[in-house]
Amino acid sequence: MKEANAATNRTGRPARPRRIGPGRPEGLNNVREEILDAAEVEFADLGYAGTTLRGVADRAKVTQALINYYFGSKHGLFEEVFLRRGRKISDERLERLENLRKSGAPLRIEDVVLGFLKPTLALRATPEGRAFMRLQARLHTEPPEISYKLRNEAYDVSTRAYVEAIREALPHLGEKDAYWRLTLMIGAYMYAFSDTHRLEELAEGICDPTDTNEILEQITNFVVGGLTAPTRPVGAPPKRPARKKTKA
Image (cartoon, rainbow, N blue to C red; front, top):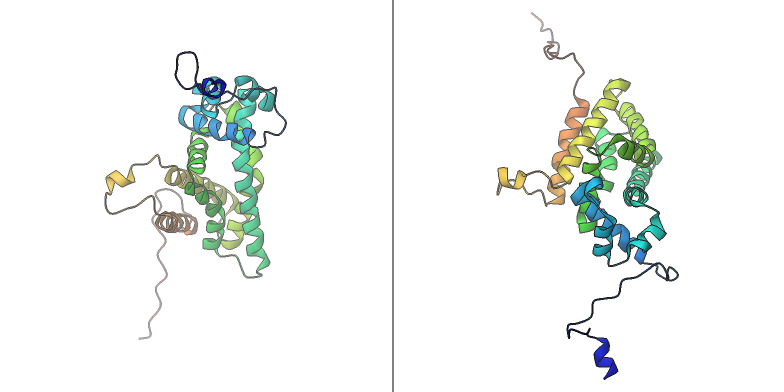
């Protein structure tokens, strides 16, 4: 009889799962990650201002006190959510660039672009990764006091390394052009990868944004084309190739 009563509450309905509180932090190896996963979705869907610790606690099935135990505050939680994957992306980009250099061959701009894009594209394979992509895109609309420090901490080193790699692969680009074009590449890939576009509606049956190979091919061709474009002032006519002189 006691066993039967343990599965129901006084109303006769099944008892709700007991929330995990801060009194049992030892041995809860997965709880911290589960909180981060839940917070990632909440921040991605609602933004920093719209997310509450109560909402995260409900999604993760833990108490707010346990969230405070691990992360200290909502801001501390937000930082941990972003840096968890942001640092991993940055580290993998640097590793890919190092491997390109180890080959001893001159850097090809297409390989540099792929090295930058692939670590982020891999996140689209899981719901958690897609949530981070939405979060990363949303971060650019968050207040500077929240977003700048996080972006700098996660990406500054790898981004500067790729600017150098772009200039090495494309010697005709000045430093200003390289920074601008990398910044525009970031904007393009975040929009394409974040699933916030409506390409599947605009080009139904033509384009498939869920096809990883298709999206990588299209974004790479677009970005390489932009990076390799000649530099010229706005409004200036494009440079025409010199005509070869023909013998009379």
